[in-house]
Amino acid sequence: MAFHPIADDDDSGGVVVARKYAWIVFALTFSLLISDYMSRQVLNAVFPLLKSEWALSDGQLGLLSGIVALMVGLLTFPLSLMADRFGRVKSLALMAMLWSLATLGCALAQDYQQMFIARFMVGVGEAAYGSVGIAVVISVFPKHMRATLASAFMAGGMFGSVLGMALGGAIAAKLGWRWSFAGMALFGLVLAMLYPLIVKEARIAPQRAAKAVAVVKRPLRTLWSSRSVVATYVASGLQLFVGGTVMVWIPSYLNRYYDMPTDKAGGMAAIIVLCSGAGMILCGMLSDRLCRHSPERKVSLAIGFCLGSCLLLSAAFALQAGPLQLALICLGMLIATGTTGPCGAMVANLTHYSVHGTAFATLTLANNMLGLAPGPFITGRVSDLIGLHAAFQLVPLVSLAAAAVFFYAKCHYHKDIARLQGQSVPDPVREAGIEVKL
Image (cartoon, rainbow, N blue to C red; front, side, top):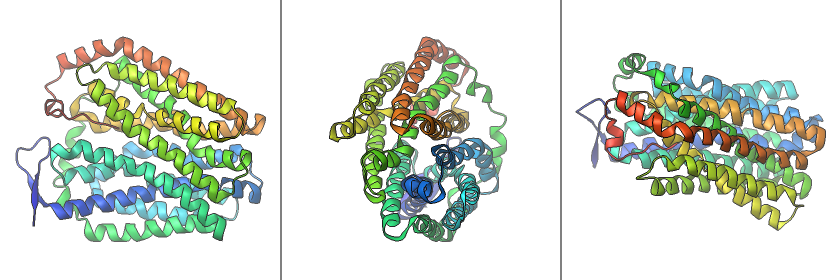
């Protein structure tokens, strides 16, 4: 049986983990991430059915989506600390059980209030899964595979979103919207019960508690000590306002303006989300390739992605329904999430390496509080007043604000990098040539 050594950043030694077991851990953790996003995004595919059955406004529908992102943003950091202290495997299994039961609660909801409570609990269950899940995956593989694994793991969110909307729409068309939620819940419950039976804490997470205490004493002030890192948090959240809003509302848009049934609308929305996921990966690769010897170019690329997505999406929603509009939406979404990679790299460069985990939790908080949570809700409220098509014409303009904040970050980026390098010890991750992507 093949083995490979696993070493923590601060350890000279390593733990030997069977390669086959490591890939099993990755597969199960990745599958739970897919379940996470399937449970989160299935709601978008059944928006038209809920709106009709319960006579809901677009603002109410947007709130059902936004409450999950809001809870993720608020609870990611504290729940991640609790997972480090009490055990990541147990925490992941508990999270999956909670969001799956809450998704089952969505299937059983009899009115809007019950659905809102169930979606609230979905958000509580999913809050820290991304940060804790990637920590588990990284712990069983060698350091030189971390960048690849992180990129592959985060792509699971897009795959889960696609499956949630496509399968949710198809199931709803055949069996009704309640079975869409029930199907996602059953998938998650099976994985939640299987996960702790196969993945063992003792084999993947030695002495987590001691490290959790030690991290508090490290230089947390670098999380907000420079103008450019704070601007990066804000700009990233503003840009995700655009991408996140389009992903949430596009099934309803296709249903209303293209007369697509829920299954076809979910399938087309899945293609648009796949474009967004592919763009995230491609733009990240482009950022690495063009900015290897000039890190500040990442900011310029982020500005370009903001302006490009604004132009393409504004042009798309200025058109009437048709193939050209769909093509422009796909192109716009291809680069709308392109800032994710540069933002992750910028945050890593602008914060002390010993608190990178906390820095990414802060970035997640900004993404959810400024973008993913308010975007669907605000767009829904605007849609109630002027219609969804007109509301979509306003959404891309937020990218202009994101580009302006990125420009502010660019003005201070080089100086802030130089100051951090003067105050910090060398970063072993950067010395190894590994760049963190979000």
